[in-house]
Length: 257
Image (tube, rainbow, N blue to C red; front, top):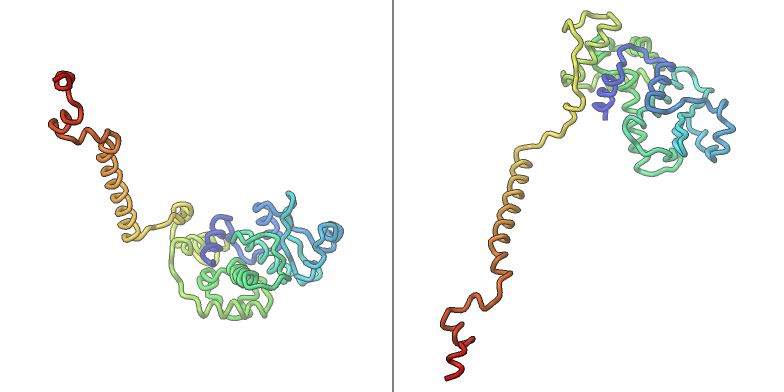
C-alpha cells in the first residue's frame, strides 16, 4: 500500500515537508472532496444522520453528490493534519466510502491499519527522511510537523525500512531535493515516471505459456469441428456403396421386370 502512496506523491506533485493542513485541503479538493469542521457542519451532519460518526476524529461522507471530509476542529493542529491525511488516504486507496468506523469488523480494522500506515508515508516519506539524514525523534517532528508520539512511530518505520532504490523513490528524492534545496539533485533534469506504464501487469513466462496452450487447444478444436461439419450435415445415404444404393432404390426398368 505504501507503494501506492509513493506513486500518489509523484502524481500529485508533493515536493516539500511539512505537508500543511492547507496543502491537504487542496489535495482533497483535487479528489473531489471538500474539507469541513464538525462545528461548521454540525447541522448538515445531524440532518444526514451521522451524529455518531462525530465520535471519530474525522470521517468521509459521500452520498447524493455530496463529498466531504469532516474533522474534529478541537484537535491539535498536528492531529488535524494526520486525520485529514488518513481520510485522504482512504480515497486514494479506493476504500469503500460511508463505511462507519464505529462498525467494528475485520475489514474495517484492516482498512484503518492501511490508512494509518499510508498516512505516515504521505506525511513523512521514508525515502526523503533517509535522504535528509533525519533519524532522531526531534528531527522527525521538526521536519514533518508530526507530534512526538507519531514521530516515534516514524522513527521505528525508518529503522525497519529497506530502500528499494526504485524509479518512484528516485523521482520523489529528486523533486524534494530540487524544491527544498537540502541537497543537489543527482540528475540535472526531473526524473519522469510513466505511472500508467509502470502499473501495467507484467505476466510471468508460465502465464504466457498457459495462455498460449489454451489458445492452441481452442484453435485445434475449432479445426476438428469444421472438418466434421460436412459429415454432420449430409444425409446417411451418402455413406452407402453404389451397389447398396441400387438395391435400396431400384430403377424403374428393374421394377418392371
